[in-house]
Image (cartoon, rainbow, N blue to C red; front, side, top):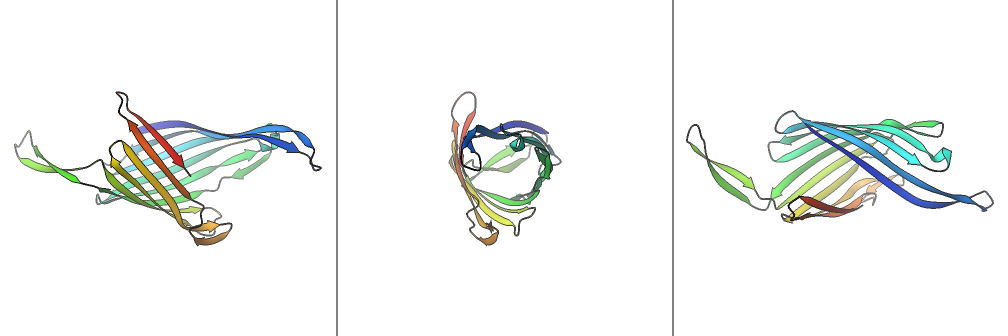
Length: 219
C-alpha cells in the first residue's frame, strides 16, 4: 500500500470592492486551496486501486464568498498485456458550501490509456540459484516516449473532452511533457481543438546524495 498527502494553496491577490455607484468600498483578499490524503493498494503486480479525499477551503473577507467542502476520488489502473496501461476514475464526489448555500460538486468520469515506448532494450542473462538454469530478461531503458489518450466526461457538459499527451525522457535526468484537448466544449459549443486544455512542463533530477526532482508546469 502507498499513502500520500498534500496541500495546495492559491491566492488571487487583493481585489478592490465597489458599490453600485462605483465608489470604492474597501478591499479584500481571496484565497482558495485544499488539503488531501490518498492511498493506493496493489491487488496484483499489474492492477491497483486508489482512493483520495480532499477538504476544500475558500477564504474571503466577504462572508458570502467564504466556503468549505469535501470531495472524494476513486480509481483503478491495470496493465493490458504489458503493452499499455488503462486507468479509470470518478472524481469530485462531494459538496461545497458558500455562505448559507450548499452545492454538489460537478462529478467527472475519466478514462485513460497510455503506452511506454523505450528507446532501446537491453537483454541481461540471469541464472537461477536453485535450478542452475539461465534465462534472459528484458530491461527497458530509462529514456523513453510515453503517449497517453484520455476521455473526460463532466456532469452537465454537452460532450466529453478528449485529450492527448506525451512525455519524452531523452536523458535520465531530464523530461519534457505536453498535452492538448483534441475535442471538447468551449463556451457551450462542442468543437475541435477547443483551447480549453493546453499544458506543458519539464522535470529535472538533481545529481545529489538526496534525490531531488524539480518540476515546472504551465497549463
